[in-house]
Length: 249
View 1 (cartoon, helix red, strand yellow):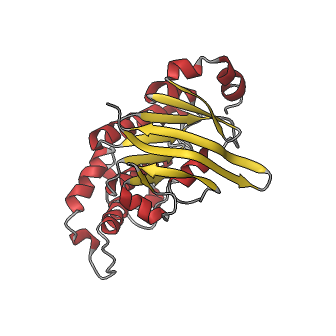
View 2: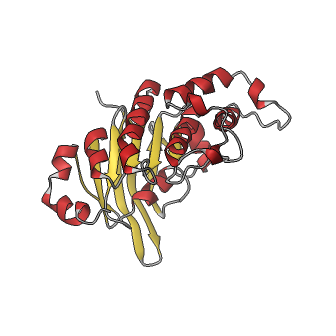
């Protein structure tokens, strides 16, 4: 039986005269990688922001594991098991890759004593293993500011996984990465999610990435879910070819 991990019911939000979410109802099933595609301004990132508490809808609900999380702030939603990775990696660039994960581990454990030596915390080995899982063990001691965008993306995912989520929402995980590196990044990313048993939702503009790495695809247009299906069904649909693929950069 399919487990519904996250469900939205009639989500609505407007910015001035623009409706970014228009009665959006969607279920996210455990164990599936769901890609969200659509033209710019369709409401894709807004949906992620609502699900993670960064925006509050004017109407509707977000349920995670059957519990209403709509009114919760982002930190409490993370505690419930929903993590987020942004289009631009949200890392402490003046710290090393490992230190970024150690900070996340400390946050997970509600450990906020600034005098604690992060490198002495009991989760250090776990965090090193996470870096290895995303192919970044060799840069554990490198400052993030010195690393290329592809490695920053992977470290950002590792930081999210350090929070031990059940669901990870990602906004354009291959954005800013060289075309020649995109598939290698996604291979590592999807492998890490599978190993950690984490379900994912990712916004993506590269249809080659969507075709290869998504189990399901939801098409956003004008604040609505226009279509949903397998990559083969969606990417060959004439409406998607006309409204999305022809406009995607």
